[in-house]
Image 1 (tube, rainbow, N blue to C red):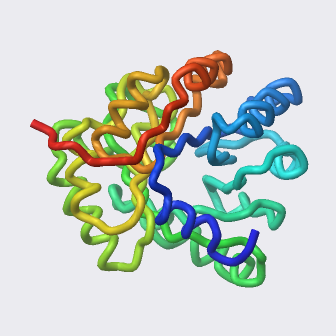
Image 2: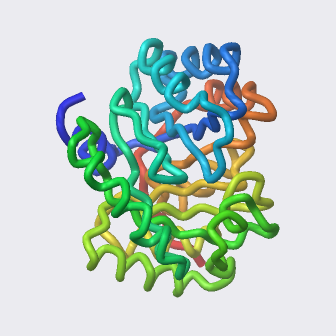
Length: 253
């Protein structure tokens, strides 16, 4: 893909965008073939690859396999400076702005910077905000940070504004893999209306109705991860209800 294609796609998209997050530790060839089918049928718009804890050597294999079989962007969702592969289209340069862990605010980035500068990857500065999803998750444990309280949308709003002033281009509200619920509609709405860049929402989304609620609140991209690991056929529901009208942040009472 040409330079900055993915960020332009996110900024210019007028439809509800669906992304899947693939954990290389849990992706076998059968699963990857299913993801490729859904992608090539237009159900999946973006594929994120990565996670907070990757223990197998399959990271590059998953990226290379997907790049040879899908026609949508494959984007790295890095958990550390080791998660870099030039075969991907882009990398979300995640800064965990909701926490105060210096390693995840800037430390890992410094280590990865020379390699990223030399790479052909499109680098997308991303404000990553961990939100309380009702239970401890891998990302909260690994990062050693406290999530933004679920009922404090004003904290997420202020964090997003500060991140934008620091130069972040994309804003990611995540409750983590296996969370009981996603960021609230009010929080999504406040963040969307506070910043100019695309808003991504993930964690706790395991039905079309939950994805639709996030889109209605103003999310530009909805991410499904652990739900498809448990049952990839959940994407059939999106096939059946794949009318993706333009994104429009509705008033949240």
